[in-house]
Length: 276
Ligand SMILES: [Zn+2]
Image (cartoon, rainbow, N blue to C red):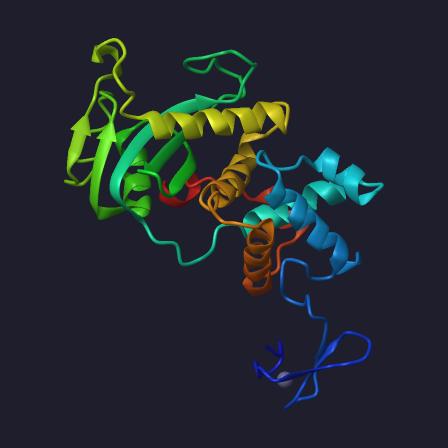
């Protein structure tokens, strides 16, 4: 659409720019999108998108810098964060049916488990996943009923049957009356199937991404971007052909607003700042 008069009829000029049919305003095809003002060829952006959607664990800025031949690490880093910001579309449906709900601490030194130590780089995440279906994963501020309740409300429809472990946070109020089965993990008989198997699987994949692709070097401030990117690939794991994933990301990119480097470094996208 024309940025001046919102007319949706544009001519393409021989220099690649667009001219508005009604007011004559000329603009670049990337104007007003996250690619606004980019001085690199779009072909390189397409390659970056391809790399992001092809690799199961994503691509690090260091690797992207090498692949695209950039002299600047910051450019590769900024590109990936711009792409991460558009992985989540605007009109997401909440999860339905049987949903496994869990929380976990991720990050920190390899092999470390359990609660975080002060000053460490461990982050709390909430995970919800449909049986054999879509997942939602968010960086969470704490394990209170308020934070969990907010996650549940935003991500789970009222018609879900929820399975959780025995933790006290998973109460009636938190889940707002949704049907709920509590399975204390320490009381499972030996050899029993893990009732939270899929949630645990997702948590292990995220941990692998954090330590594998990014070598533990994800700052908590930016964690939600990485989780969104993970979710994008995970929820499309059955899509045949990476071209379709790339096309979907391009579609989001074309309809998203401009994002600057300052936006990326100055704002944290973790839900805690929306809910408290
Ligand atoms: Zn116009």
